Length: 111
Length: 112
Image 1: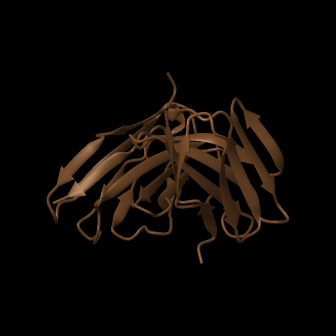
Image 2 (image 1 turned 60 degrees about the horizontal axis):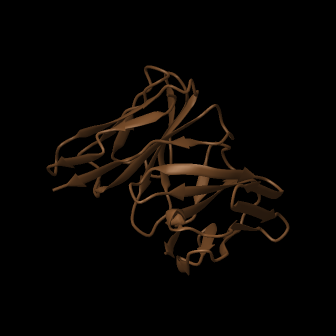
């Protein structure tokens, strides 16, 4: 079983829809990251969080440490949100340098 | 502008040849990382460096080598010992361990 599981793997939505991407992990963590990868391949960091909730524009990230679960929400989705969204966790055990990545959620927003 | 550059964006090599991927950052970050991305899989750590003249192996270091002679630069060499080198390679940097990582645009390597 992977340490970081994302769901769904693929998601297609209509413009304007509310979108939720989920991330579950199996180890104790010090931080969780949400990343966005555009078709060209470059990755942008969206959020780094260790508790509660963060909001940036139309993006909201939440984390429940007890349940080992995080969600990324996109409100009023737009075709430019189409990308791969990646969850990554920094484990409490082992070396602090290492992030463990989920395999990503491919989001397509149709106009 | 501050950022991370990787070159080239696309690279083609014949099997058995070594190839070096460039990664440069002007963010004054101490830590730098190399990841490999394969379809349907999460990023996997190849090598990382916390400071100049120091680097450690990641999870999949076999067949790869790195150097960190300057703070700004962390080149990755894919050697002929790497059994399946065709992949997308991403470089990242951070101010230090445990901090947010900033990613470069990536290099897609195809070995023919």
